[in-house]
Image (spheres, one colour):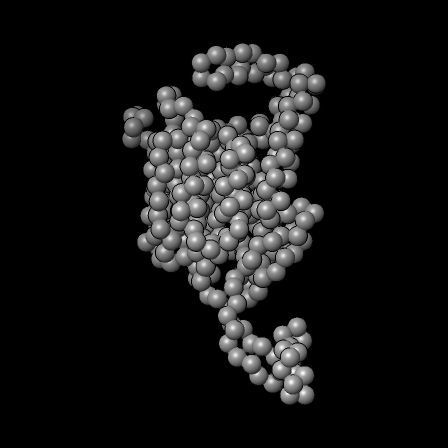
Length: 319
């Protein structure tokens, strides 16, 4: 019998580097960057404020049949008495910075996968999609004790470097580790993002947002002044709803209690508490045009992303 050390880790408990690399073939059918504000599942009832790619002015020329009348330059048209349009070229490159959470709070899963694994897969999809549309991608990968920085580059080598760092931190997680959750680490990661991001970055915070507070919102607000930000919110179904007909033992690692999950009022309060917390977070982030994408640990990540970021939110040209 093979020893525990020689056995390959369960990819549902620990992220598999090769599987993250293979996600390159699944990174299609969605886009982070719309060209204009649209109604989307990402922003609920509010229009998304994501900037999309920038436009550079190229030339002024005579109107041609088929040109978009919205590009008419009325000043020149009035002066020359002939219709003229302004022609723009789309900027071909944008920097995307991923903040990938691998803290102790992410090492939890009740159904299919750990939150930490789902975060790694979400990051993998984001990396490969970013490179596919010709943008630069970098990352801040963090756990409770350290933050690793990979500067944005448009290269496969950088993608693999990010995935390797995510996998390394992911495999360092275990149920018996004594490291306590650092409640300030999310804010520290956002602070590092402020240092790295000048303007027109897309910042993707892949996290369960555990420990977020007023300081978190303040840092996000500052980041959104000149950048866009999206939060794929990783959660487990058990965090949303207690299971039926079970006696549960709940522990914080030091003290444990037994809970009767069959009690209707307890289940109702538990669910209401989760929904209220998520709704409040979404409401706070919505003030600054930050979409929250709920991603659970049960359904395939790529399917959830396509539903949230699919055709209604697509940029032009099939991106």
